[in-house]
Amino acid sequence: MTDKDIFTAFGGISGKYIDEAAAPRKTRRAAALSIAALAACAAIAVFAWQPWDAPAAAPEAASPAPTPGAAEPGNGVMVPAPTWEPAYIEPEPMPEAPEAGMAADMIGFFIYGGRMYTQTGQYVPSSLLGDYVFSPTADIDEWSGSEEYVEGASSVGGEVYSVRGYDTNFRLALAGGEGAELYDCLGGLWLYSGADLFETCLHVEEYVSAYSVSDADWELGIDNRRAIDPETLEPFVATLLASPMQDWGRGSENGDIYDYGYAEAHLYFELADGTAVALRLFENGCVKYDGSASRICAYMPGAIFDEVFEMCS
Figure 1 (cartoon, one colour):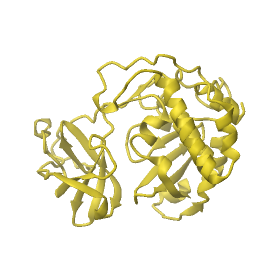
Figure 2 (spheres, one colour):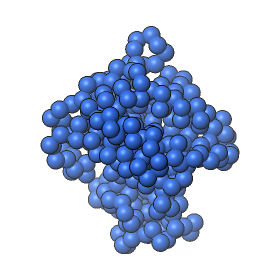
Figure 3 (tube, one colour):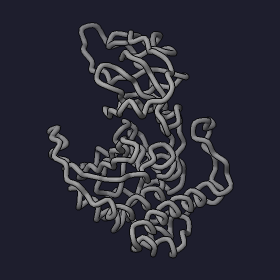
Figure 4 (cartoon, one colour):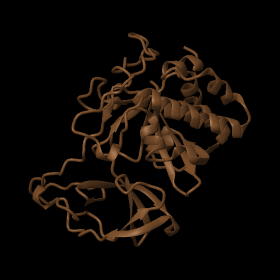
């Protein structure tokens, strides 16, 4: 399957936009956004959808695109679930207290508007902070029972603010002694295409620079960055936004992505607003947002993915 075949499978995207990917930078950036917009139309058609108010049942796409069929049985990768069936990110569960004598490492979180926001490890300048939202209680620890996970509860202290340019249902920031750290909430979302997450929520199309870290260095916590020419990644971003989102978590049709032993690579996009989007690439063509524990991935096997994966490995 060629790169053009991939785009064609994702909703009948015009070859005009694919050919523009080889044009000068400004034209290609416009083409990337055009492809993403067309992919969203192909997946959702005339259906009006707001991810933050998603119904209990998945909305039904009016004209689901056909499965690209890049993966075949026996070729070394898992055959994915049908394309364009929306992937659902379960809300974060409220933990139970551990047994006496047990220790547990807790990820930083707070509860606001009935949603659990978890730390991303990404710090941003104060200029990106918007309005003050609330101050969490900071009274949750490893020994807290589920009844204590209520509105305003948290495992961290500080003041919570909105983040300029981001929906508060997805992203907030906690200002504390070390600066303002981003906290994201993806629970309860239905995602059709990569654009629903990587564009609508994360604004990855606004990147100005990029770098990779090998999986070996990442595992050891070594920040050995290798810069990547932003222009070379424009076809990758266009494909990412046009790709179907699929569940590769425990109990899913695809199975847990980490159980297959796929080689991994780490790609980071630095945006004009000072934030970054961390991606984990799996050799079978899956791309995961690494700011979340969710294993909902964009599925984009093919030459465009392979080239970037090799570049990042």
